[in-house]
Length: 380
Image (cartoon, rainbow, N blue to C red):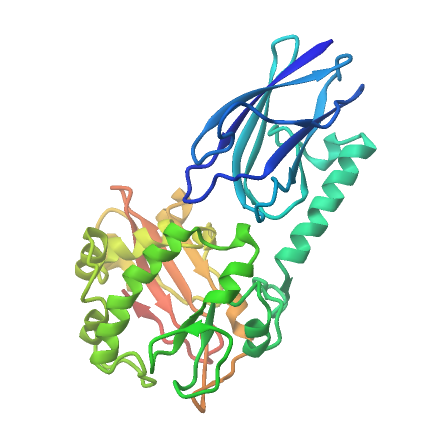
């Protein structure tokens, strides 16, 4: 008789616990254990709880490959979602195998977990593991559907229109409402005149692992309503025109000010902060170190000499590897559309930056568009 010890951790989220019956099956290289109910005296899977169980087998299973969790109905109660954080399995020889889960298990189903050893497909030689990987990938593709917007661009949600997003429960967290007096019997809740509304029924049917938790949703609504109400009163929420002054944008963020937002407001126009954003923004890999300037960027040493200071020059800094370029050439062929009846345009800029002796990244020159016959080079 071989005894495997399971340590099951339930998440600490609101309503993460469950009343449903949970069964476990261990699958190893030498066989699999009988399906065994995880049951102790009292409440088993309460929110934030850590419970220990034993799974008995006729013989040892060898290397543990999979852990199957079976979630089934308890008595006459309705289905109760369960957020499982992780499960640790201690084998008869004392070794510990960790099975990270970190997902909601909704309804009555079976979930297969693999050990958290981050194996690649090249390391999976057994048909059992290859089949599990294939089924997991298919499930992810069905849940997260993407399509190509344009060659070389990031992918976008696989829908053809906003109407399709409203009809698909996976995307129906927020919806657009053109007017407040429209016929709507779907249970949507929104403030009259506001451009966004929350589809409450769709939240209940959305895949639980791609929606916010109840506490996160409540936090978002709590923070969004005061700001949206203030913007509505100021007439900024329905504005379609361009901003005329930077102070107009500050009027939007009049509430929920933070140290970071105030710092950005005060320092956004400084060269050092401009370079900081390149390194700490959403796409820092746009920067490339240069050994020579490209022909499409006609920058001369005289242009940047006041910024580089005495004792050095542009060629010297290029040789030292201190000159970097952010080239947004991919935007040159980006398709553009009309917005509010007006044709939109996009530029393909170049930005030349310099890493100074103090280790600060500073902009040297910005060329708004590489497609211009006579580039308008602006030295920062």
